[in-house]
Image (tube, rainbow, N blue to C red):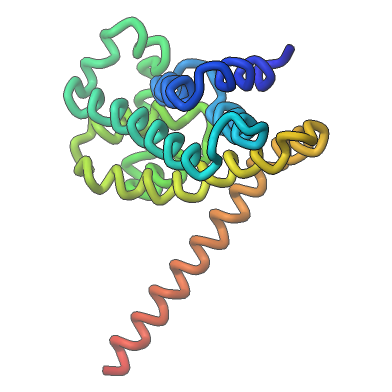
Length: 204
């Protein structure tokens, strides 16, 4: 039995709370793929064990609470967090320094894009908190906007493919590329709206 099927079994038996806890573990850097966890939550809704719209709400909260916890730990402990064995394993000094460099270069954009980079999220969110350059509410806004793209996509994908696992497996593999396409469209729309607003302001 693969990971997806195991998660579906656990979630079907224990409901929303088990999905929420699993997403907290994802946020903490436990090697449990967030996208597979979200898809499993959608599948149990498709099988009738949960309401899909409620599942989207539960998973959004789980993702944001997990991410915010990592941010606040970084904010509170700063670089000292690397002295804790768990975080030293998740974020070795060399990797921490590399993420800091990327954060210095890309700033807020890195926090938004990190949601679409499996394996990078925890490191980026801890570093964002440790730098003390970003307020908690700005972090939550950027992470929340990114989660509004990724979370519903994975949950509804699981919901739609609950009874057709072959189709679902194919689209899970395509899903990350699809997320980048959606992200690109959102960025183009934001740039266009900014340009229109700039044109309007220049014309007044």
